[in-house]
Amino acid sequence: MSQAHQIEQAAVALRQGGVIAYPTEAVWGLGCDPDNEEALARLLRLKRRDPAKGVILVAACIEQFDEWLEGLPAERQAPLAASWPGPNTWLVPHNGRSHPLVHGDHDRVALRVSAHPLVAALCEAFGGPIVSTSANVASEPPAISADEVRTIFGTGLDAIVEGELGGLARPSTIRDLVSGRVLRS
Image: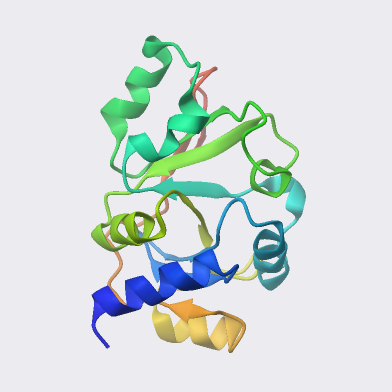
């Protein structure tokens, strides 16, 4: 099956409330529709992740985050535009836009515009941002291949998009937009 067909099947699975796996810049990721509470809860159960932690949203372009960035002054948006697409995740005020399972116990939501062509194509096919969290069980190392994803999650996923990792040695840097503090480098 072609990669384009896999991407379209994954986008359909996302729209139907599914949980998918796909390669990102550094590790394999799990994703779902960030507005689907059932899908979010299922993804967190699969990972055994504490819902208080929240998850990252990934997009194909900054415009897919317009709803989250609305009302942010231009000087606050400038660092985002300058660092995207790329391995930079920014914590921005969620302003009530994100589901509580996306932002967790935080008043900010984590956003990244991916430079990985497959991730961008997936977000384009879906029509907006998707959840992007490492494909692992909490506190275990993340998967670095589709075979590892299958071993960890078995038949618990609705689609796996085959592809190569983006070549980065580690996941994205996470910065707080308001304070400028680096939370993960």
